[in-house]
Length: 206
Image (tube, rainbow, N blue to C red):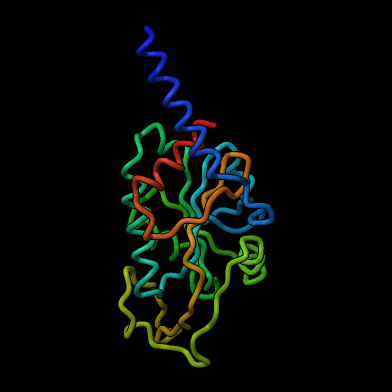
């Protein structure tokens, strides 16, 4: 009995120490409205769930597929019960190109449970501002998308002609948000998967 109590005490102290490393990042994040997987939502709709949120766009040829691949590995580390308590959001910085259907197909390539977020430019800029993120258009001209290495192709009508898009640089942080909607940590694709998963579990169990 004493041994069990000692183990429980050590686990509690370990969890407490981890929790102390996840203070609320005051001023980072907040409620917003957008379109997620084709439906109008508010970020507050995810209250009660732990959220991992990141920024990118479907024509991103490098960091965005890497980020969503990281999402997939992270998600697969969690149990089925833990997966029910988390939402993985990918917010586009290119809403003019990334329609609700197209971004849903893009994130769905990695996992059907992932949520692609788009909306009007004003809505996206508000999200960017709330999370103190950034994006910049890399060129003044457009690029033919057949010259971009892409995960999914966007359907283009014959009337539209050649499919073109802009290229962007953008914030690559992964925001970890708790069940109350407070941002608790900034992570990266370089963060060890086990470490990130442990932080998610701490917030799930709060």
